[in-house]
Length: 404
Image (cartoon, rainbow, N blue to C red; front, side):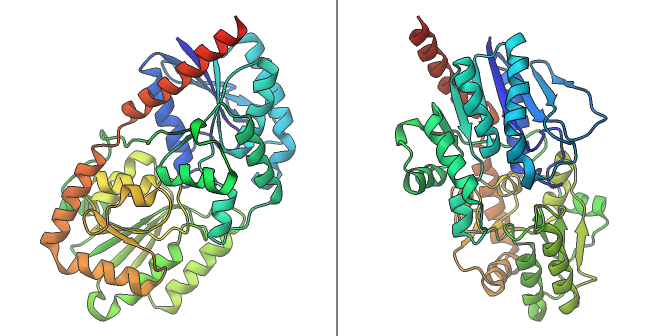
């Protein structure tokens, strides 16, 4: 049995995606841990304690547990977390002294810094998964601190392997950070087919209290990076010919600019008189999202950057065409003119044109959705776990050989 210590300092896989800083990374950690446990791993996920009334150890399922680690005040803002990395690493180290691990898996740059310390303290191989990259976000207009860029470079230099979700992310690491391609490994995430699958649109709409008017869907955190405002502007652009279309926006404000972005979104809705046609829906439990996907005619993902794009894959698994930005991992999930549309132009006019094509030809849209569902079948958490296992086993064998 391989003992895997997963570091997730700033967000917990127990948190619902779409709330606060919880998003695709939470889904990734939870699903990967579960799949690894099913093939013989013992997975311990270390998370910073973010509430005072939580158990130190939470047994999630056989082979997977979450350990809440004290590091700073429970209500510490994300922007202040770099100051508690050493405390987090020290307390994880105390646990590992009593409960040894074979390999470390750090998620996000903050956890990477902790993993950097623990690797050298315990002589363990370090696998890093960054999920988002500061330099990529900077190109998308989301400025990140020099501290983060420097930390990412430091962690990359220390990592024995870096797993990425797509070839686009692999290229970004090599071109923007100068990472040795030999240590970059593509591990495509999967989609949970027990939840996300094709279903009857009429039944899903009945469950949500919707009529038969066209429905667009946006799922994601409300922050400038994700583009909820552009989704609302797209709806306004459809007024001339599809003025009965509704837009469901599922997710909550996130990050330092989240509240400001939510207020901007509400102003757009008011200015375009869309109050009766846009529904702002709080973040939903992950498995509940299937009903929203199945109810939609199309899913909008106008993100400025995406290392992968779980929403696009989950929509595809439900047989829903996706209209997405041609950025990052989205280009590997959405096949232009086949399962949806990839747009390089970031404008409501461009998105509305793609939506009109979908709404105006139901037979072609149904075929596109069927092709999307077939493509989603090639994304499996079991396959992702097998690929991760092969990476880890090589690193552990190399570490054992070096010690001998």
